[in-house]
Image (cartoon, rainbow, N blue to C red; front, side):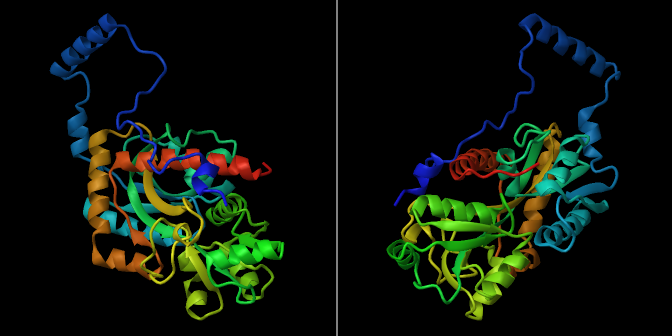
Length: 355
């Protein structure tokens, strides 16, 4: 059995990014830089340039556009609307939800990247943001063209099997599949989705043969799992927890590095026989690149306060998610690390999307 870290080529240490980002390829000569600083200082002194601090002190000066790159009614939309309402209260300004689904969440993401970097356009991003660079021909850079604001929540996936499948642990499942040379099918919510890549990483790491069956959403996967038309799936905990509690699905392991409070008796896949296996679904807030640091800091501080509210944490917990706060710099590191990780999995699995 292969260690999952061998598949991705990553160590357990997260790839880091400097919290300071340099834009452009070339640096100006020292005398040019000095002259620019002198000239800018002179103009500021006589009031010919706008005062950045004053402009940021007025933030937000108009309604905030909150882009959700998915259809209304889904988990991201509900979470986005909850955060939007809470941020509106804290910032004393309207927050307008703008659903922009399409092209694997890249449509709304591109709109965000091309918006003015003044903090009046933000977006709720899912972990697909770090997967898409390996699957789509993007007109934006998932690292360079965004200002990370902060993480919001972690949403674990869980490996489940139909009750007709032998084995009640990950080790038993692997042994049975190998002994009988079985070719189990696993369903996902679409090519390149978190549930798809969770299954591909398991297949590559364990050496078990699994045939992927893509659907147009997790709801359709659940229907065919209930009917036994697919035997294995890696859905999010919110999408599957009721079927697990009713005994219609057998949970074998959660995909995260530690157990989920929503399913405390279900071990992780990592501790169950596939060392190094980890898939952490997440949500976070992004804005276009270049948002002034004081505005990013303000948004991060208000987001952190919202996520500390018991009503928000309870809402997330009911759906099997965990509130997760971070600095903008830490969120940037997560995005950078996941982009590298999933690029390796996509290449190893030979995943392609027709565009």
